[in-house]
Image (cartoon, rainbow, N blue to C red; front, side, top):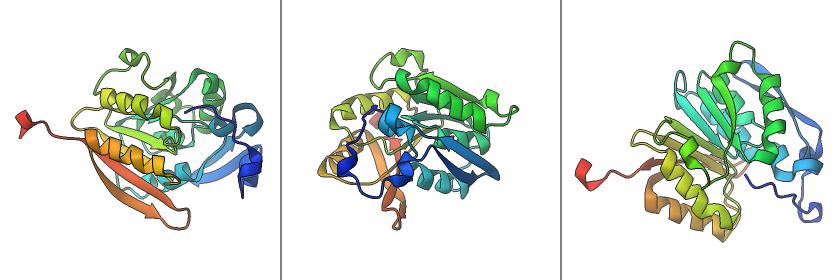
Length: 218
């Protein structure tokens, strides 16, 4: 979500993030994602959390066919691309500075007959939410978007706005720091949360969240 250029000297094993492209096979399609670390930092590389969530979606644990999906903090667009290939109608979002790069990846990797099902749209969490219909989405997806503590309140506000009672949120992340655990506690204040998958090889958790039932609905 935030276009934060990480300091290379503080990261290990990051060589793959500096490659100009990364290739994946999902939904019987070869997907070639362009990367541009130097220009956009974290928004322009594929993170393990996105790959793990794509793999989870491909298993069929959730059925995306014909469903309305929105991805938050899409970055390179891999997750939204895979969701579209799996049959979803996807709104793929990020901040304005990342949109041209994001749109190029989406257009390059979706067949022309599928492209109408994928819309790239600007979304800064907590801002101009009225341009997104409240409760319109069946699924909200986010991969490695929980890392800046100053964005947590805006992210929660955005999730709350986008959700209906039927909406399923799927967040894929590595729990690196205490602040990540703090976000989960904040999320549980708004939603019922459970872990649905853990990838030990990549140390990635996938959490499912749903709006808590109101007393009047019980």
